[in-house]
Image 1 (cartoon, one colour):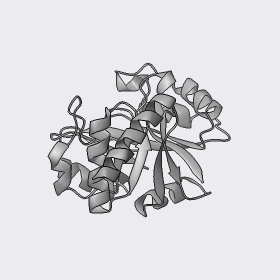
Image 2: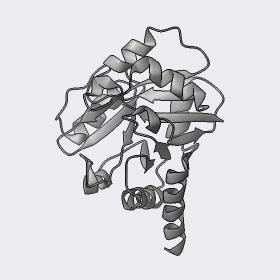
Image 3: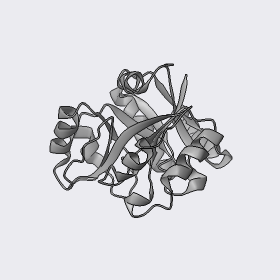
Length: 212
């Protein structure tokens, strides 16, 4: 099993305080096996880390793209995609580049989220546990993914050091980056809350789901 935080920002996002080298150190300290660097509309943060001789943790390239309808995360690509395209065209670009398309915090009304638009798009996975999303947004995402049978992931969406690894994805594989991305697409994943705060929130979400 791989412990993955698939949504982390660096200072290159413009709204994050995370220094690239510090991210790797913190992720290792918190027992993560893999992380994805997903800055807003740039791969500069990933490029900085990729130049380092990193051991004992996998670094997945990614980007959080601003579309006209809201944010979309792409994993496994090392090329920037033009921002403010339509969500549908952005998904096409991601797939042309061989990436994995994820709907981050899709129902969080406090951020640039896709909202109901997500229902008309074909995603490889849905972020059902976002570390910066209030429980109701995560609840709606969880219900949607379950109803549509779409793979589920958890992610910190860390913009600050203390957030790294707060929410993660457990991936059923023991191999490299390509196998992790393949496992996500096949739904061999589960979302997990690590911090006590997020564990309480996630328990609320799961209890509400059980009640229907």
